[in-house]
Length: 193
Ligand SMILES: Nc1nc2c(ncn2[C@@H]2O[C@H](COP(=O)(O)OP(=O)(O)OP(=O)(O)O)[C@@H](O)[C@H]2O)c(=O)[nH]1
Ligand SMILES: [Mg+2]
Image (cartoon, rainbow, N blue to C red; front, side, top):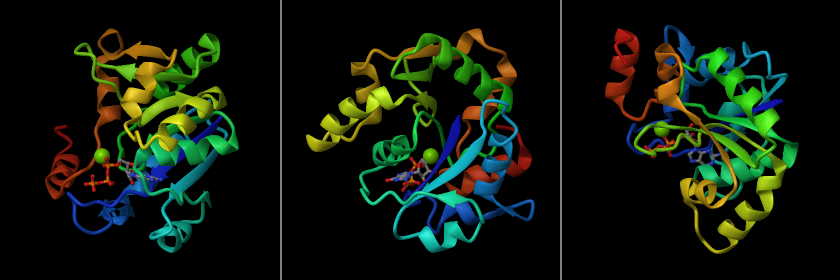
């Protein structure tokens, strides 16, 4: 399956492109990608940048597909799905757990649903760490056309399958940590996330 790494955000909360900030001497997004590549179910990685940061992201040496929509993560997912079924991960998730990703891909491939998304006990979804089928494209297209850019809502309205996080190994939860602020980098360095 293709691993699609969303990298077209604006990093407003962070200030400056957070995906290229160096953590242990390596750009943040490379931590994400290198862990993604360790998942058995992932055979190719494609980064989905915006037009604005294409050059900087392309310099990392991975395949890219530019998201020209600029409507948030839903546009990145829509763009990535033109490649085939995809496991989507946000580039700002440097602690992803390859076994968790493989677990989601296994459930996705068995369930044959438009998407397979982790869900917390309170109902909160993690759509930027999830598997998507091309069958999800028509609904996504409709939503985008109508100006509805909330990916969570699109997932809820689809016949998707969910992976209940509370029923999984506790050590997999760190997989969902994402860097939004400078303070999150501090947490990452301290690893008490
Ligand atoms: N391709 C693509 N990726 C996006 C887009 N918006 C956000 N992302 C990526 O999705 C991931 C999660 O984004 P967020 O942390 O919610 O948002 P952000 O825009 O990067 O940061 P903020 O401006 O602080 O909200 C990051 O890896 C972003 O680079 C988009 O419109 N297109
Ligand atoms: Mg984020």
